[in-house]
Length: 161
Figure 1 (cartoon, rainbow, N blue to C red):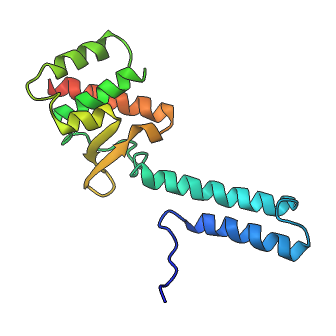
Figure 2: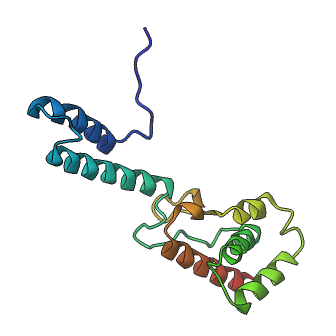
């Protein structure tokens, strides 16, 4: 017999929400959907689970220092991310456009897989929490944080060129 395994993304909070929905209706004689206390508990647990999963998926991008360490991020990846930022109106103005133009004229930048990843909103940087290389998906972040990352990428790229 093969043991039953829960999917990795099913968190404790999601399990609590499922349990609350299942047990809430049994103990009160009402369905879980009709019991406001059960609905509130399930909503709270589901929200906590979603926040936990989102935090894990962004790789700690909003950690204690706010942003990952960009010091080892390649020029190609930074240029690709800046392209993503300009395309998605997260970095505006002639400074961002001019910087992108300058960066993409450097030899080998646009032919790099790191540039392609950056164009898709994937930032390759070192986590301040684990001190290891990570990939951060900008599309999964709230817009204010995406703008903050775009600003940091633009500043770092400006210093490199």
